[in-house]
Image 1 (tube, rainbow, N blue to C red):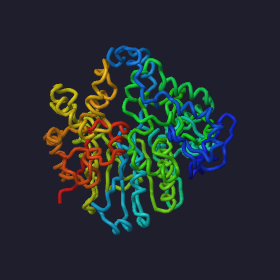
Image 2 (image 1 turned 120 degrees about the vertical axis):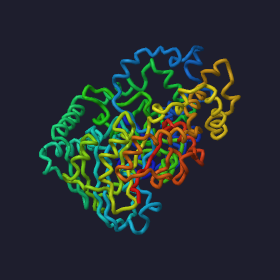
Image 3 (image 1 turned 60 degrees about the horizontal axis):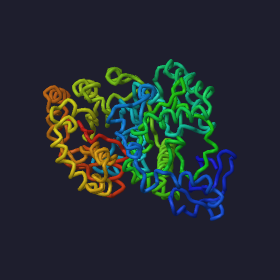
Image 4 (image 1 turned 45 degrees about the vertical axis):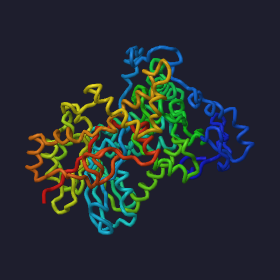
Length: 554
């Protein structure tokens, strides 16, 4: 069964080595692990020899403990004995996202329904490290959107502009060659004026450097020609299962609900689905030397809210326990909806891989000069572009005619430049004051204080490490952030462009896990247990992230 056509969970009785697949849909859930389902009892019995490795995994045992506890020693991240750490670190290239995808329209609070359905719009994703925001924005438009939309997507990294990062280490030959043909076609067009692709009612104009496009095409071809599935598996395990990193892995496992063995398989599919068609290394996941592009802490679930994932999974027949399977169906549904909307809506995409400030100077070459939304990611952090240069460059390109037009910026590192803001750099007394707040607000995720203090290894309890890493979730740092924003240079830059910061955000909550309309002092406020679990253990934010919206002074 092709994974592209998998709308319902299949029977888990399959064998990738022989390409055997039971053709029936799943009905009978494994009552022990709830990770896979079968069409009938006979299939479950037949498949037990394979499934028991996951079903009886030590990670699923109630008495599982980290290796440093089992071997009665201090963990490596305390003693700093990291072994071949340097060899592993050099493999790292990028990681998956650590914050939730967002739509840069919150239509009800801004342009409003049904007016937006007939409105022509221009959007600028000028440092688009997260292409999920583009997809989310288009998918959140009214289904009957009749206007036309110009969408600028830019990032200095051509690998990001060229396509959304894939999550599976392996892919089907069909998908690999389709990607290669598309990239090769792009590269062969060469001159900028000719580089146009039509898709339904939408068009895509690429102004990327032809040499860079050719480099990407050659990179894909090299990976596809030289890497075998065995090589890809070895590269995956070299990062994800490095022996010297066992304590770091076990620390990450603390508090997690064990489920899909993604670290071992590298595939993003429901656990019971066949992977027989995934016979090629994914060229987007490896460098030219065949090394994996990911950190050993990477997880496909980073930066995703589990609530929507679980809802999508259940609609297709999988379970909450098989969270990777839920994730697969959710991403697939989002991509398919995006594809349908590209065919139906009148969307004009412009792709570039320029420096964001240089791009602002050249706006006009195939791009709209003014934008209804400008999403800048975190280049407003001072170690990148910074607020003054950003507003000076892009403030003039914010629409004057649309009173809801806004520049949306993300600050991720502001606390390191603000004395007293960073909990980790402060006194232990301040941390100890916040610890009970985290445990009181997230009791199921943290356990009780008695649980954390049991045994002679209580000081090295992996749950305690995770809780301490998440202390900022209950830390109101709004006074420090306000002080950071009220720097004279930042205020002067905004005033010169006739811009101001919204006191209450209308597009995206100020803090990750917050609610739209919350004051700047509000803490993250997840409501369900799934939302709390996602926020603390899966998504990976630092909880210092802050979104700011600049709008024109009326």
